[in-house]
Image 1 (cartoon, rainbow, N blue to C red):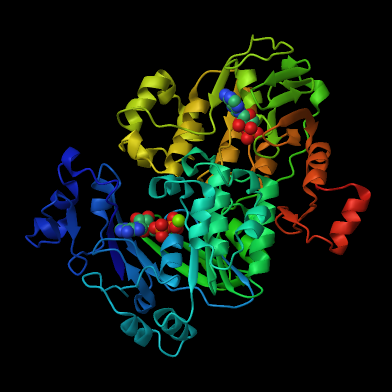
Image 2 (cartoon, rainbow, N blue to C red):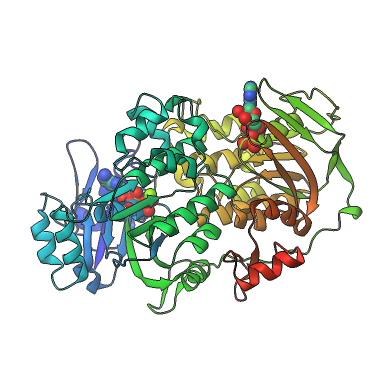
Length: 588
Ligand code: ADP
Ligand code: ADP
Ligand code: MG
């Protein structure tokens, strides 16, 4: 069978000549395979479509996907958003006492899956023209554990709580302070306990619309935990949180699974690895379809995900592997210095940053790690010359290109117009096209309005622009935010390759350990008391820096023997204790 999908946010029928219709062979024979709807979008009648794929190639905006799928999948169709809409096949298994992870790229139905399992969305089983009742759904799944599960959802015997993906939207739907928000959902008088658990004690009286991303995330997680539910869903709980906070919520979620059913969608693979007991990989084609694969033990699932191959199903879902090569540390002494700084200080009203002397060598990529609100962004701004230090002076003879942490899309116009206006002739460079634009998949968003980009699309664009500008030092602040694990690994490689090929240097701030591991030659470590006093040290080589950093966080990493990826040791396990006693927190 083949399915025909129109990706509506790419379709720009006002700017094309309906090539999808004009070039369609059946249409040319007088068969109405592609018709134009009242709104102007093309509608592809699947029963009449021959699956030749000519429309796919002719569409100037790559808004059509025609995909061949195995016939037997038809029976497993769970939900379809409209005639040419996204389709989700199969659902995860329901297991108690385990954290069940959902792992997959953006746009293959993870959020849809959570919405269905939480009872927020009644799956239509492909009957997109009407709303089904739970009874019909239960009938469809009869004989499987899902029938039993959905009956309990229908009857209110299983109560659910969902932490939504986009925490940025909370201030738009709730006005008031943190305490008021949490009070509304506090069913068992645990507000104090839970807010302490998430480090929110000092934020309770703050207005929700004044919170940082990390604080919003913590509030959303707290609100979910306060609900007295039987099934909990966490859609991307780590976004905006620093590593210590990620571990903290991972521990809380693991604990929760001892008495409830817990599902988690997560793109930070180190955290997913630590958090989940079992994982369903979701694969498919972005915006077109997604398939929930069979359940796997966490280590196998993540290794299969990196490999791009599901052995049991014999399905290759990615052409290439994500690889962790332990790049030999660059001998820093041999490299000339690009920029150096003496002891620096910078104070705001309530915050003081000190940075110990250091230097960045030509051609190296420095990772920057440390808790939220310890001055990483402030340091980046000092190097960029956006801010001046109160104490110490930085020689300002290097040219800097800076990707800020929070990207505000102010530009009015399309991505292409923005790129042409800021990057100009760089756009035609073969190297830039092949090593930056192509891997970051900018082509697909070229015709979109900058204002309409999703978080992940905006991030990819901002990285491309930062790397496209002429500079000696590239400062990339939190590039992994909003990207899926795939895109993170790609972005990390893109940054490395650009530096390797141009001999320029980069400073990359990020909380995703896999990202830092792939991108960085050496690292700087920030610490201190968040929001009060920050201390920046380094750069160090990976081993020394990670030891310093992880000792503070209290965790150790080992390397997976097959993939070489870093894995968090179970706290208190033999390996954990043994590595701690030797002071080896990280295998670089
Ligand atoms: P993921 O969480 O894996 O990124 P989602 O479940 O959010 O994926 O969405 C999968 C696809 O389903 C999206 O790419 C989008 O095209 C489509 N989709 C999601 N929600 C809707 C909706 N309400 N109406 C139509 N299409 C939708
Ligand atoms: P990080 O990047 O490590 O999260 P930042 O450098 O963004 O940390 O912020 C460090 C601290 O400085 C935070 O407590 C933040 O609230 C405060 N801060 C940042 N910018 C300003 C400013 N312009 N005025 C006052 N305080 C600020
Ligand atoms: Mg999602």
